[in-house]
Amino acid sequence: MNFSVSATEVRFDPDSMWVTLTDGRVRGVPLAWFPRLLHATPAQRRRCEISPRGLHWEALDEDIAIAGLLEGRRDQTHPVRPVPSAA
Image (cartoon, rainbow, N blue to C red; front, side, top):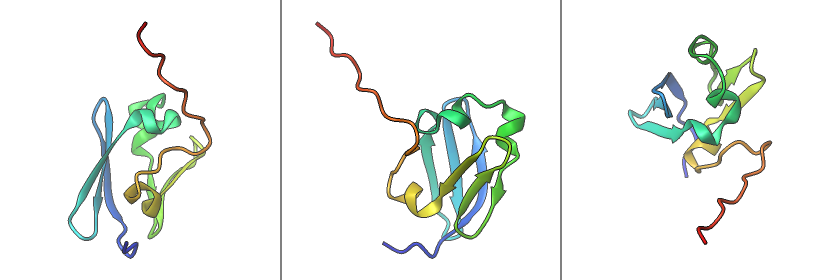
């Protein structure tokens, strides 16, 4: 997989984060994958710093690597809890 692409824009809707990449692709991921962003205010989400390798929110202590985003990796610092099965 080629990780030479970087982000050019980040935007949000109520449920997702959308990242526009330098190669023209737009990658959408659920905000639930990133609890800090999920619980952030819209103003906090807009304060994203875009670098060649990823996305950073200083006030939220959140960093997302573009390579990880493209691989479908979610926040690695918050364990994923299994969904209870219906009885």
